[in-house]
Length: 256
Ligand code: CO8
Image (tube, rainbow, N blue to C red):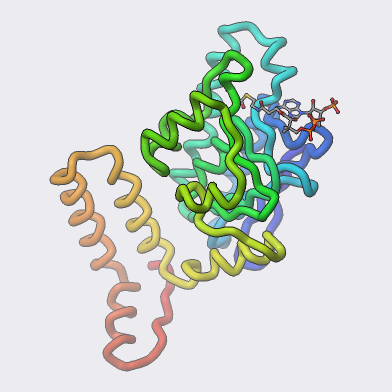
């Protein structure tokens, strides 16, 4: 099994576990990630998903180049669609995801991190979309998600040069939310704990609203925000949150 899914307290932890190939993404592994994400979506008890790579060298070195070479062009188109479809499941998860980037995050590996809600990086993290060096371009969402995160200029610079960005630069360019000096998994749990105590449906309304910010003209985005904020306002948790404020006590949210 090259993908493992475990529970750690409130969190689901998905680990790419193929360290001998720097956790490279074969089509089988992408399929396993998809199955694991389906399981996370059905598990109504985990409050955040943490994704990391086994070993101390790589989060994920990208698509499995040896396998890519051996496939027909038709299969590779299907492969890109499969990768995109599986990574898009992260957008639709009922909980937020945090990529814990513990080394190389290249190509499809960086694209997996980009598809997560948040990214934390250890000091040895290295990011890159080196596809041009192989005569390819990113195929698992990199050309779409990177410019949304860091702007078109920086995204094009990374994609056209294929250059590697270290952890410090990645933080400065907004590619990662936070640099972590200590244990990455513990830091990931602490980071996720800053939001997991709140109402899950309400967090989801907020995620949905922000996701639409890039797709819609401002006036339509504001309409979506008004709809979602009304849905949040109607939850029992909103009633509880506002009542708790008035009564000067901590709210007890029930995800309802
Ligand atoms: N695929 C397959 N095997 C890999 C990959 C990979 N992406 N990366 C590393 N490995 C393997 C190596 O072949 C090696 O195996 P072996 O020991 O059997 O030779 C083992 O992992 C260790 O790797 P290295 O010896 O190379 O380790 P180094 O520390 O010297 O170098 C690097 C680490 C710099 C990360 C280097 O391995 C490297 O450059 N890897 C390739 C990175 C890359 O180019 N990734 C992008 C791939 S393309 C992609 O992700 C998107 C394609 C979208 C296509 C959509 C159409 C389907």
